[in-house]
Image (cartoon, rainbow, N blue to C red):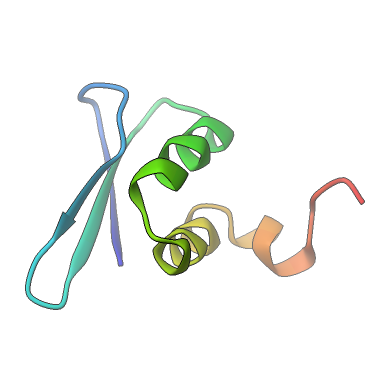
Amino acid sequence: MRIIRWSGLPAVVRVKGRGVSAVAIPENLPSGEVLQMASLVLSPSEYQEFRHEVEPAASEDGADGG
């Protein structure tokens, strides 16, 4: 999965081509809000991959406040 930060509208955009999935995310939006929007446009497996790439530390050490 390829993640692109951009200065366009505050939206998460998914583009799928020949074996490549790209996700464009707003460059100034906090990660939490990006993840909320991404959950609406990505499949569960795509979302997990995306989340791992956007917030690798939170995914690896379970930093969920618990």
